[in-house]
Image (cartoon, rainbow, N blue to C red; front, side, top):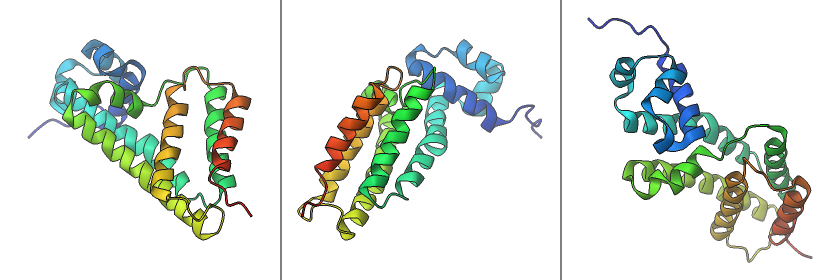
Length: 195
């Protein structure tokens, strides 16, 4: 009968996620990971598999801990004002944190996603969830008469996602808040119903 683990796998996985989020896959060494997780190499391999398997589990944890709450917020959006507030909160958060690394999923997309199919699938899963949530939010706004009736909500959802990706890619060195918010307002005005 296997001996029970002396650590909480979910808690140490969260610490591994932090290392990968900060350093990316290539720069995160096994020593970095075990030091942050507070376990030895044997425990890491025994519990999570190799570094690649740990990375995929960390991406899954990121989707659960970071992506899911954002999707839940988007699911509550029912007006352009609420969408503006969502992005303004993101901009304010970037300026309130002294250390704010780039989105882990974005980092995965531009590094491992290009060379590793499993990472690419995880990135695409996250992307699909965001697109679906933004699509449904825009559909709600269009039905309410907030958006131009000729607006293709599928294409518009991609535009909103690209805008979000631009914001999160500069998280560590955010754009000036006033200019970022004004740009977002300008963008959202293009979607608005005009009398």
